[in-house]
Structure formats: structure tokens, C-alpha cells
Image 1: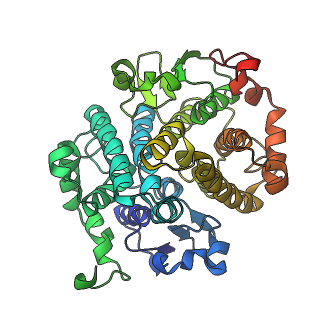
Image 2: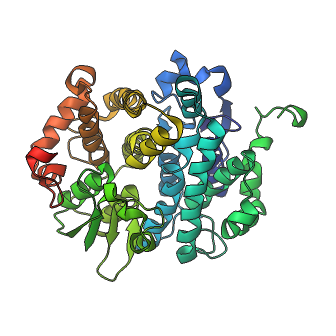
Length: 214
Length: 214
């Protein structure tokens, strides 16, 4: 399998964590978003949404959207599970995942912020921090009902795959995760101990710039 | 079961369609978003995200996020299915659903547009139309690979549950769906023939204003 991805894309980061949790190795193909390669015809043919990640299966099937990719991986490679087995727990896990996926990440992705800045003069940082804070506060409250060592129970799920990249982004915007979202900070620290989260980190990707240039 | 919903909320509309496709009847509890009831403590305790829909199960369990609700319904009430059974087809169905759910709807929901207008002076209509068009064009291209009579194959799925409310919103913003997205227009017309889509329509909800006041 191949994963079309960009080192700092938080949705690519989610897919990398899920693949690593499943013990699946893939070829990473870099799509340099800042150069606009996702807008070119070659990539648009792979994903008309012009977004990463895209998972290419061995038969050439192309799957976009990180949520769809993670659910697919859990169905085709069920061990270890990255969704709970109980239907209510699964729903809560997906609810947490969507708090990030539809409630936060879209507000502060590269394309949206560029558009808001260039067309409407919006301060991208102010806009991003507002929605990140709003989503993380909701996640913190919801996780009180679901969390064990991780967001839902005591093993990592797709909710953690969404949370950890979002916290990475929050810190890039200068937010104080440890102070304002202590439960999420603790979950994040537990994730950081796992190799799957370590190897998926943006800084460890082949297209990451060297440390001094980040 | 109870569904906390608002007649014109497109995410509430999705959940209503899915419930109706499953033949499940629920008590609808109106949450008047324009009056800010979702921000009050009573509702925030039910959903810290301060969003509708919320599905309340008979034992009091509360489930938020329309995607999580639709997936839950398909797991607990498997007939008729609203996701394909084949893993690749399921992934494509979820991909289409997320093109709307994370790519379009968040950009033009009530809370986000209010914030953009009040804090940043953004023209809500221009902003909304840009992102609706971007998402619907991607959906139109992706559906070429998946559609039969409906978005994925010949029976309605969660992708149609997301698409139809988004097209309803597109028309509210004055967009010409028939002209610009002919495949989606045709799918929408087929959905409109089904009773499940008819009874879920905003205008048919108990909290919808009378026709002259909409």
C-alpha cells in the first residue's frame, strides 16, 4: 500500500498513526501542499478533493478522507482494534473523533486559512485558536465520560489518532495544552510513549525539513 | 428514543433521514439554535459541543455527532443497511460522506458564519458558496466512480443522508444545483421520491415556521 501524505498535515498524521497501530507498513509518497501539488491534475485525478491523505491499495484502489481510511483499516485488519467493540462505546469514540474532524480541523487547515486570509483579511491565528479551544473544551468534557488511559477506555482508538495531531497543531499556535486541557494532555503523554505514535510524528517523516528549517 | 434537533440544521436533517430509512420513530425535541438554547447549561450537559443532533437512547445514553449517530443506527438496526457491506465500497461511502461532513458543512454552519461575520466582517454568503461549490464538485467527480441510482450503488446510504441536506443548503444560498452538479441533482431527485427523505425534510418538522414565515 501507498499513503499520499504531507509531513505536517494533521489528517495525514492520523492515518499514519492508525497504520502504525495496525503494524502495517506503507510506502509514503510526499505531496508538498505548500507547493500546491495537490491542485495539479495528476493528484486531482487521485483525489478530486485535492487533499491528503490518500491510501492506495495494492490493486490501485484509491481511498481518501482520514476517517474513511481508519475505518477501512479497522475492518480489513481487525487486530488490534482501533474502535471499541460495543456499539455505544463505538458511537462515543466516533463522536470524539468528529469533534476534532468536523468541529476543529476544517477551521484551521491550510487551504481554509489561506482563503480566509487572502479573500477576507482574517487573522488566521485568532480564528484557529478560537475553534481549537472550543473543540478541545468539548472533547475534554466528553472524555470525562469515556476515558481510561486513552480517550475511550484503556487502548488507543481512532479518537486518539485524531486528538494527538490536533494537540500538535494547538501547540504550534502557542496554546498551553497542559494548563487548559489537563485530561487531554495526560492522554497525549500516554500516546507519546507508544511507538506507533512516535513513528507517525511529523518530524519523523521523509519529507520533513531538517530540524533547523522547520 | 429522542432526537434533539433543529428543523433547519443540516446535521439534524441527516439523522432524521437515517432514522426514517431504518423505519425508527423517535420523539423530536426542538433545540432553537437561533435563540441560543444549545449554549445553555441544560443542553451543554447533554452535549458539550453545543450542537444538534443528539440522540438520546431509551436508557438515557446521549450520542452526539450525526456521523456517529448514523453509524450507530446501522450497527444496532442493520436492516435495511445504510452503508454498503463491502469494505472498499464502505470506505468510498464514508469518503463521500466526509467530503460534505468535514469539507463543506463546517464552513457554513450557523455558529461559524456568525463568528466570521461578527468578529472578522466576512461576507457569509460568499464564504459559504465558495466551500459548498468546492465540495460539491469533488463529490460530483467521486460519485462518477461509485453512483448507481444513489451516491453509492442503487440503495440510499449515509452519503445520501449527508448530500441531500447539503443540496438543500446550496439552494438556500441561491446556487444552481441542476446546472452545476447534474449527477448530484439526479441523485437528489431520486431521494426526494422516497418517503424517508420526505418526512425528514426541514419543512415537515414540528419546529418549522409556517410557510409564509420561513
